[in-house]
Length: 250
Image 1 (cartoon, rainbow, N blue to C red):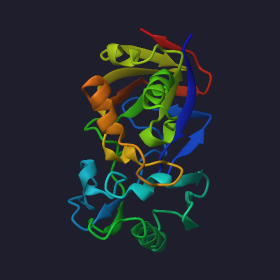
Image 2: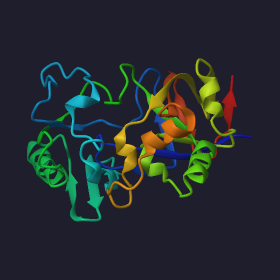
Image 3: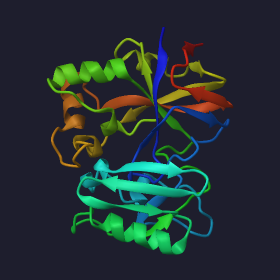
């Protein structure tokens, strides 16, 4: 029987990850505290008046600044304060909704962005979580697929490379792609599995160090003829999910 092994959230897009044991989900919405904020760069077209969703290219990303991949996050939900840690920097605690804290976050982020990339400019907050799809999504990935990929690469590849939300244990390796278009249940929630996730160069960075050490997209291409890992899903029934929940395919 397949089970939910891990739940991860990423409160500030490309700026840290945090493991949690359970979460409540709402139909048609992204995961709470996941990609709520993003750091917009100086060429961003994000509209701060309408706060409409815009593509990921408008934000500072791990694909352009790989050292961002080594950030860990810790959320205090009561205060809205997010603590960010990096092995090469002093930790920072901010509430991104406060202008002074947002300015500190932008300055802190700038230390990880190469000089030939668009510089961080301000903190953006859209009307929904800023996932990489035009619909409100979360990502579902397979530990068996990760294990197979690691074996092929002859090295252990961390979950952190892929910035996923939900990790399933017990599916056959790569079986998740055959489930596109079907629904699964976890706890009280239900999901429609909508599309495969094409991987970018952010996955080439080691999440422990932020250093480029393995060309994951190119390796996927060499092994399978594509660069896909994981699935984007849509919440179609609200409910609470928790680590250890059975994964039921419908």
